[in-house]
Length: 451
Ligand code: G3I
Image (cartoon, rainbow, N blue to C red; front, side, top):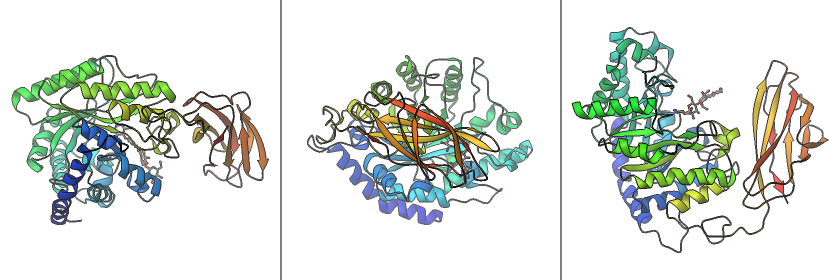
């Protein structure tokens, strides 16, 4: 879509956006809230990362449209997707997401303009002067195309190293343009779309540590010198090695005190059940406790499409069922659930045993691979589960552990060996080794049943 058409389209949907906001603000006590409506009641947005390739899946889109008030294209606005060769911009996939969001009254976060990753190789081969021009052209190309349509842009992503040094990460931009590249990017971005909030976004900056201190000092310096920066994004990818920090709220607050908004931009927390739910609660409560925390985005809708799906880090399981973490987030946002929906805030379970199953390949070699199927109980405890796994016709399984298989052609039906009993929301799994015999395709995991 051309820039002019994009702007007209935006104007036409502005009414829809306003109507959606009003609806959200006026949510009644009787109706079930959604993440978006409950967050709107707190003056925040609640967003998700979206992949254009899944928009054709009815359950994916229905969940997106029902629950979320903001979307972030997961990969479609990155440099490799939008400017694969110099000066040739392609917006087809990103436009698809933006058009869908606008048609449903959702806002859009832009992710991301200047990042060392998902960078086409031509960028890395430029000399300094050319690279500076290319960086500015890229910012102008994207922000021009979506001018007036993006509430916040991740202008620069992940420019600092992990570890204790607080140093800048090596990248073509850092190595050839020096520390000033971030400032140049923000100044270019402000001129390209003065209405967009301009964010610096990073991970492992969620608590007070050497890396977040380095970002803090940069933001402080920018504010003191009038370099245009409006917000800092905290990715918030958590797991047992990187748990929700105890000083999360304090860290958000100290950035806010510099005079910038803070946003939780890529939230996901590996785990399951009540422990995962409790961690999500901590994050939502931290954001709500900081006035300038303007919104939260989870990094995907369903566990099955997460970038780390084996860790089941999201709010909806692989069958788009609300997890305990969903109920916890809704409750922390002050929302009320559907009285008929077990597990929703304030509602008991209805005694129906259920489970979900997700597959991941855990090892891979020329002639074979190891697969792992993770089983997660629903809102009720279960005493047994059954899952079918259909292998490509050529493949054969040589061993299977933590499960008991029976075979029908290339379909194996797996039941527990010792691990049938699960608490509500808890997980177990079985693994297997398969010979490829010429087919590298993934097996298909069927519906999980439990009692
Ligand atoms: O689309 C191709 C497909 O055609 C190809 O067959 C397949 C083979 O590997 O790759 C597909 O592309 C993958 C793409 O995701 C779309 O699924 C890439 O390989 C894969 O590298 C890419 O991963 C993305 C990752 O960023 C890349 O760095 C994840 O989806 C995305 O969730 C993740 O997001 C990042 C944020 O942008 C920045 N912060 C960290 C976060 C998590 O890593």
